[in-house]
Structures are given as structure tokens and as C-alpha cells.
Image 1 (cartoon, rainbow, N blue to C red):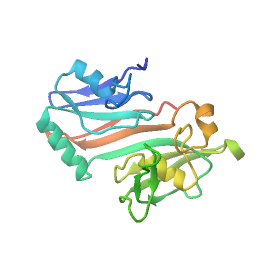
Image 2: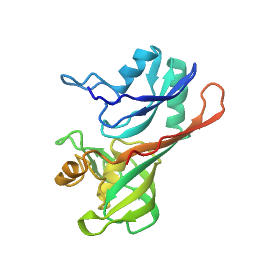
Image 3: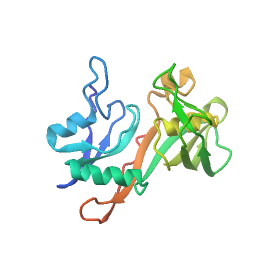
Length: 214
């Protein structure tokens, strides 16, 4: 069990907005000692809480919960229709050449190396990420970029694989960065920093922000 506890940023009778620490599962996973997760901890506080979307265990940041099956249906539909806006912050290896752009590379699971995902233009599912470079620093092996990321689609490991595929893996990524990166940087430097959506009951626009802890 991680010592870091999730933070509840907002709660009403219909939704809950949480801030997940890196190292905590979003939902239970198979295997001994992998039942502790964000969903279980929030349900301990609010029994009707149902997780709407997930973050990778190594990713920190904003996660939405719906209170009850009807609110879950409405929020899930909003995600399917891509009317929920999400923005992430990442630190990547190297200096991205362009200040902004799009990465459109189809992705699928690597059946021989789960849970890794791979680029596959033939059998993969459409995946699109928009990015903007906020700053660049360092040089040589220490060169890095601070990047704002907007996933248009929501494929597993999408941001991580897309950045790795253009030669700029995220710092500390244990799956897609060079092996020394995780040891050197300690954690995956990827954070779900902003989310905006229409409240599923009141229909009032809402937005939340969580500063990146790196």
C-alpha cells in the first residue's frame, strides 16, 4: 500500500473529483497485494462512487467518479463523445523539434510483452495526441522538454507510446524510456493536470486543475 493518499478536490451528490498520487492503482489488479487502489479508497468514503476513467498506476493527477449508475452512464457517454477535455503535463527526454504538433499513430497491445502497447498502422486502433512544448532545458543526455499534452483519443498508454515513438520518451517511464531513466528519475513524469466537462446533472460547465508535482 502506498503511503500517499488521494485527495478529493470536489464532491456533490452526483460526482467526485479526485487527485491520484503516482504509485496507486486506479482499480484493482490481479496478483497478491494489488487490491489497494483509488477506486477502493474512494468507495470507503462514498459507497456509491463508481470510477469513470483510469490513469496508469505510475501516472498522477485528476480522476473522475460518478455517484451511482445513472451518473456513470452519463459521464461515460461524455467520454465516448469526446466532450470531456483533458490536459496532461510531461517531462520528456530530449528537445522536441517543433513547438506544437500532432501525433497520429495507431496502437495495439503487444501480446508477447504485456502490458506494453506498440504502434501498428494495420491492426492498431486510431490514436491522436496534440502537444505543445512549454519549455526546453539542459543539453546532451540531460536535455529535456516540458510538454502539455491533449489526448483526443484515450488508448492505453497512448501518451507514453506516442512520445516514445517520436524519440522523446517520458522521464522515468519504466516501460518505454531507456532502462536507466526509471532509476535516475524515480517516477514517471506524467500528470493529469486539467479536466473540463459538463456536470452530468446540473449541465453547468466545470473545470479542475492540479499542478504537476515535478
